[in-house]
Image 1: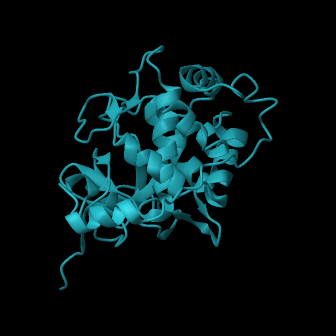
Image 2 (image 1 turned 45 degrees about the horizontal axis):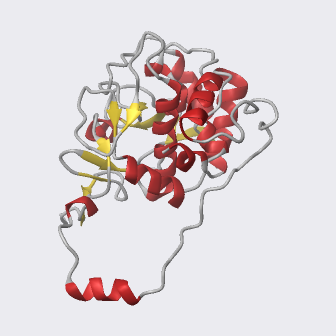
Length: 269
């Protein structure tokens, strides 16, 4: 059996070689295309008190806006995920977040081969629990293969490690997890939504991103610099936009603002 491919984490690179450094001095600068709004349909209504703001003022305005929501029970997530994450090519299936596989909606549970409820903001990061609240917020909960979900565990997000069995395009090491390229931006926007929605002014912890890994039980998730890159590299697609709309229309009545306005990530952080 072939060994799993290994991706070297960028954070563990100690130095550039002299030749690479010289090349960098002469190479033309490459400017990344900044994130742009995917919709302005809600700017004059839902987001009217946030438009035009930046920094802490924008974060505060968005917190007030998205905190008005209908809350779901943990058991209600099963049926909700069958709708929010339905495979566009097969209405009998859901699409799994990290593996990208399409799996029957009926295979939800806790056995090998089933899919279960993955908390992108790990429950242990701030003791979210599965009581109604952040631990049942549909904006950061996605279907995933039971085994892959267990491998991710409560690790922070970063780049590098060995390929995760069952995905081939996700990687993990001792303290972090790297999702497949097609959902890197999704992960970033879910994490940053949680940081805006839960500010410690209710019964739950003040959730914040930081630039570390190995956050354990602290109410932080990293690595922020990498999440910002992912937001730029993987802009919202039709699946993510539809999911945001379904949650707004049919379940929580609130939106993930970073799907509608991914440029607000840079405006806040």
